[in-house]
Image (cartoon, rainbow, N blue to C red):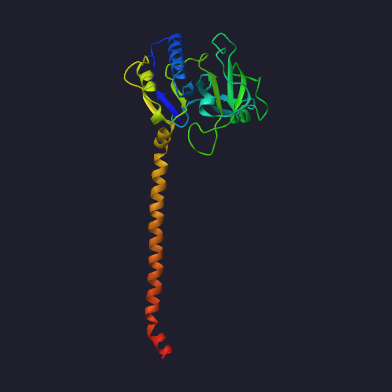
Length: 248
């Protein structure tokens, strides 16, 4: 029941204040729709985009890669990512407020060596929350360090909406689609997909590989069975006269 709406509301020449006000206005419209449980802005939707990666030198001079994502309040609730400690972003986290951030468990383990990150300062930001790890870039076993910053303090011009609905996306009704049509998109129509559709699009390559592997395994099994059957049949046919003599 998760819907992704992807299309820029502002052009590249728009100011940060324009981007912030327009995105937040449309977000409040989506939140107020019937059947919508929660909604949020996000720069990089998990499993559908690579993310923003930057490298820094730690205290031990070891180079560490960190991913950053710009989100708005209720993102973790919408994506159902557990908040382990601290608090979520709130509307009070504005551009003139102290700069804050939320990190995942892998970030705390890598950067803060597993200690409590709440209240720690990193890159001129105060860590106010710790969330559970989840897959962002791919479904590979490795979990990457992620830093989440509020949209109000880091406005971007290319954002997406993630919307959690109480019903299946197919039955959300025309009200939701009318709200999307009324949005002030820069040009064209928004791309609206369910998270299930996005996952199918992401996973089609491994799914095809798995299906081909299954086909090859079945073919190999048939060939092996045929080979064993043929060898045994040939050996039995050679011993039929001997068996006849023994029976006689």
